Image: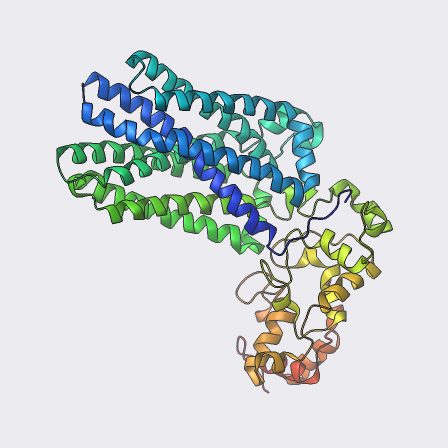
Length: 503
């Protein structure tokens, strides 16, 4: 909270996903491509296979030039963006791992130099020297992963670092090894999928058949390692994080499920088109394979980033940059006295520093659909109890008056007509919408904290009494402050749930 706030229309999650996942794709291509190129070159030179060497030379242009240019640009872009969207978390990573970053940058410089020499040395270098440079390219690309993986995995599982604050305890954290081997498998898989994309453009024949089959075998190996290490990675994540995700966080769990489907699709296509009928691998199938590989990688990254909610560094710092150690002091003093840079609009400043790291009003993770048609009292009650909501949100650590200021800011951006007027609904359909907005943020039908069973046998009068006493029914339950029409519609909808009582 000691930094100015960078306020832009786009959601931070989308911005980071665009730059970060693009960088992940490129860096993994470079690692896997380095290994594929040098091993394949050795085999081709041993067999005096000129056609294979020509193919590898063409392939190296992408791996050694395109990936490095885009990788360098997006790497700088990541530093620029994270320093603006979450300077507090960026400070934690720099202060704790400054020498790790320095070593990683050194490895990256060697990787860049070796990759360029490798690409431009196909015709001018002796075969042994050229392959030696290729090995340097791969080894230093992989060593760069060895370092950066420790810092990335630290954010989800800081392990003993929370108690000791020591570099090595944070670096060699519980998910370090599974993540390292998992990313190595991803690198190999993605590189081979790109090689298949290039090979698919060749005419059907013996060269295409043996190149596709050879590359598909590499792809199957990479995919097998990836799937096995993904299970290892899942088991290495502390049980409390997984339990919370299964209970309240559909996004990471859905992402994980998508990755299973993508892995199955990749395996099927590799076997059918890559191993069984390699001579006729269609370009469209190769494009589909590449798309599935990127989608798998993206799904895993989405899982990794979202499963640690509500933290940016698990157990140490919340997603909005507030350290857990500051929690008690903030509850006493509030947010405003701790803001080093204030714009003069306290309502907006409080929203930005407590909510804006994850939410926009009408874009990414929009709040308007969640609050339109409600009222300031309801919004303030929700703000004060964010830790109870679905999605595993951090607690609001400010004062009650500050929660009201946040509610005022949100309400100032809403259409305050009734839900029926906004959505054109009535009766049971309106009641469902009222439930979704006023109840479903905590009690998800068929999901988190579902209370459907508790409605069995209740009649309209019972439900009316329940709404009268809503604020006393459980921790954080707000009073029902909706209109009479919203109230009647909500009761009608609840009566349809699970054999509710008589109307």
